[in-house]
Length: 417
Image (tube, rainbow, N blue to C red; front, side, top):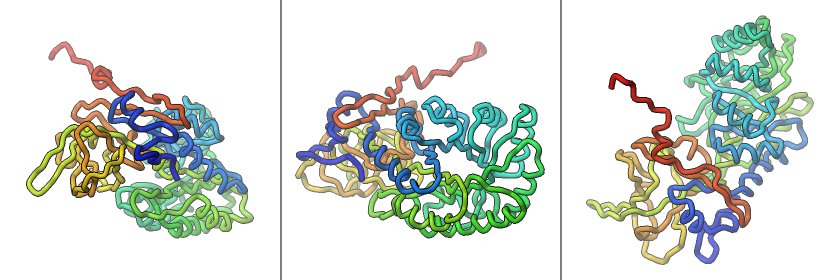
């Protein structure tokens, strides 16, 4: 459930009219609901309250400092995949002992930064990476806490670009090779085995892949225990889906109901890495209609938000519900809703039934809180959008809209040009 709703035919974020925010801060603008974010985060906390756990929010989904701080203030941790995300998490007040660091391509600089920061653990993705962490930790005269990311070869039944748990993917260590990798880790002098990690994909709409993957991982845990290798932290990743159109994904309570019985009698700290399921439906993207255009057998609504602002429809063919900010009773049309970027792939929706929209009116792209701003770019030298958070009748800018000077910051013209 989210707190974006119509009141007297006008779309509100909690108790604030969307039109008021758009008029004050301009468009395109991302708008987030504080109470939706908190409700979704607490859904995980409450579902797993009976078992030791840390909810490590996946910053890749949305890395705005205000949002991370909201979760940090409510005992949240962070799942990071870069030095930049680690910096954001620390700056927002996430305790270092609640930060886990995944990703297949950690650099030496990033590993050093994480070791200095004393994070909970690295989720290691390969033998080379494990040896590199050991080498760097040895040079720094510290012990690196690690878990191995295990690829359980379970089909998550999601879009192939966001599936991560099959043998053909770049992520993790094949489960059949895991025992020898843990034995190698035990032989290294500068790493400490903390746990085991798995993450099979994103936008999952069924519980069964979670359960199947966890069963396989727990079998491995038993093998490791028999070899004298103790697992303290069990990181089950994230990936619960949200409703974009007509999906009916499970909620955290359903996940807990199916997961916790498998952990009965086992003494772990459970690590959860939700991202999309917390922030996805807690944010929208608002755009203004620039032009209307009739093509050959096709109508277009041209708005000021493009693929550089929200790229999911272009790269995934992803569906986002789109609705007028102010309802009208005009006849419905079949239209493409497109942006100003010079690419044929620049669209927010294709062949979408919509009530007619007039020039200057606002539209709301729903369920845009995850992988919206974080995947945005300056393509076509377009400044990135503003971001606003709403709490009840209060609202505040949480990211200023970029200026033209912002998009050239850092560029240097050499003397020989």
